Image (cartoon, helix red, strand yellow):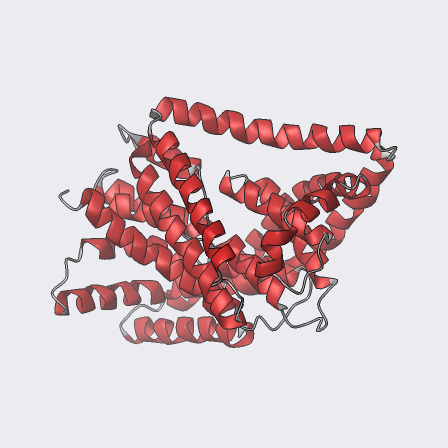
Length: 410
């Protein structure tokens, strides 16, 4: 799948570039070549940025493993993951790491979530009977990771505040509703393909209870002012990160773990992981750069607007689609598209609000695929790409529907 996808990106860029060249734009090929070199440099920059955080968190996780913290968390969550990942043995360290990764993602702690997730993927790879083909458990983990369930989308509030929004948290509830839709679609699509037994009474009762707790949490957060929510987010995120560090060190010392030596042993893995990532990052980011520079995305946008008009639909949502179209490929490109939309149409315009909701409820799917599968040498993704993209599509469609519900009169 990844082979065909990568080739398809370059072929799409080539077709779009030829069309622009024949239309009188001789500089398009120079722009594509410049983009290839720029993306290669960006790949190295991303790897350098990941190197420090990978070294730090893999070192800390080595302490947690020796102190049996990860194993204890895995045993506590065994009943849940026994249904989602039945081939992973009860108490396996991967289960605890997956839980830590999901908690970090929910709080928007991307710097912590990535190294923890890579470590979890490596633990799952140790159970994989086919080294170059994604296992069912790896696919479930990746799709859940890429479905972008975030309780506190603070980065979106920051972008809106920078553009002068009087109420930066105006999109808070729309984002939570849309990201919940993407996560549920991702979960159930993988469960359907893998034929997981989620339809029994116990599973349904557990999911209903989880949804109730989630709804109550949303109601509580929605009652906070923008300033209070920002303070809560800042406190919760930093307190969680530093609290985890202190907890690992204290429990490690209590259980007679040589914490410094364990940290150094784990941190050495950071270099290996970062080194292994570079080829995958260069391949994917260069393909995305060629697609952007060729104008293929602009052509697709014109086609979508024409299709919406032909169907008699309101076309205001089309102006927000650039963010959704590039988000699976590049988070930085999606952020740039979001900011440009807010600047061009107004920060509280319908297109800008819809783009912000899309940004908060979708994920950089191909980046996640390249990083997580590339770190363990998986080349055959099986149904991971389709299920992850289906979750993204659900997030986009839910964003459009929710924004027409909340902001349709703008």
